[in-house]
Image (cartoon, rainbow, N blue to C red; front, side, top):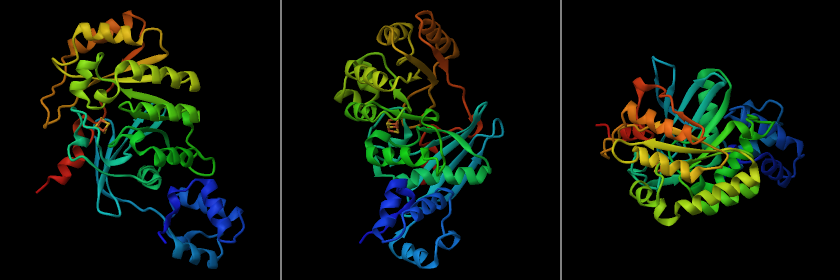
Length: 344
Ligand code: SF4
């Protein structure tokens, strides 16, 4: 029988497992607490009887990813990490310090299938989904490295979280549990390129996390050039799914818009975008795009970025320009991993 990863189990699943082993249910809670504290060795579970620890050792394991590389920005202390998984795969994560605390940006898959043209994470395709425990361990490792609590999470690293739906939902439950990291749903943001059935499923669960949509274009033609997913779902359907999410969760939606020189940064694009989002409880995050060597994309000029923002603001759409974090260690999402994999 395949061994179960304790760090990938919710509190209820851990309790059921322990119950099924003929042990007292409260042991399940104790084990969940140890595992979510970052304990990796069953021997360290002090309040668990030796016999049960031995049975756990035989039948289960605890995800244990390793830090392969760390880069620290001299400008703002942003830290970028490469983590090594137990099967030899590499993923990346970032932690940034904001006024309200530490925000961790984690990966949900090794690579990505979605093929967005501005993203380095997708260049080698999808290798595999991450288990919930592998998402948890990214946070546990970064907390340990910083010796400080992470208060916010964004699922915005490599991978499309909604393409790994089940494990991501499990992760959300685990990370939010008061016996574990206890990170509030309102402090978690999930970023998707727009998988509509999964957005609706997520909306129905009514877990009030923040939803961010990688939009990047104000019309179907342009979006299809930039993001293959736009050939499957059009913008109208996407906006309807967002409105459904809003209705169910009453959480403001964020639209991510990477500005690419000469592609989607013209004034008329800003007008189209404001028309699209008119009257919606939302926020637009303008992102000066990172240069990705494999694509020909370049960053828009500051003048273009400011004009774009001005048009949106004038039409009542709340807009911010994403501050560049860790610009001295900068690499577009996925590039750190790519560079590492392609090293000689
Ligand atoms: S932007 Fe996100 S969804 Fe698109 S290819 Fe990159 S990781 Fe995948």
